[in-house]
Amino acid sequence: MAIKPFDRKGQRIKRHRRIRKHIGGSAERPRLAVYRSLTNIYAQVIDDRSRVTMASANSLKLTVEPGKGETRKVAQARAVGKAIAEAAIAKGIKEVAFDRGGFLYHGRVKALAEAAREAGLEF
Image (cartoon, rainbow, N blue to C red; front, top):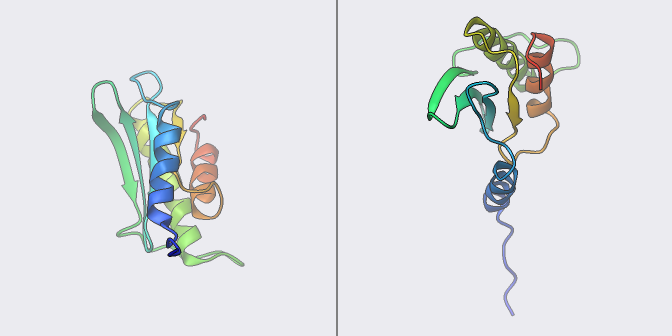
């Protein structure tokens, strides 16, 4: 009997599908979707009913200095959280539904969420 290798990406996709059964975005309360790659982090505010991205932010061109005891990637995630909140508030969006994209809620995903909350988004 062969041992099946662990499929990390497949497990994340299964978690994301399970989450998406319950979370959807509308014009009144759009979805804040987070994607975390190995080197960067991306966030979008999406209205799923009309299939429109209302605001987006990412860490591709950010240069952020990490604070004491903080890694560069976590500092980037905080900056992206603040940027997405500012972009959403500029478009008149205060409340969102947080979609962690199947990623566990800790580390960079948690830092992005907390920074968005501090900047004024409610979820």
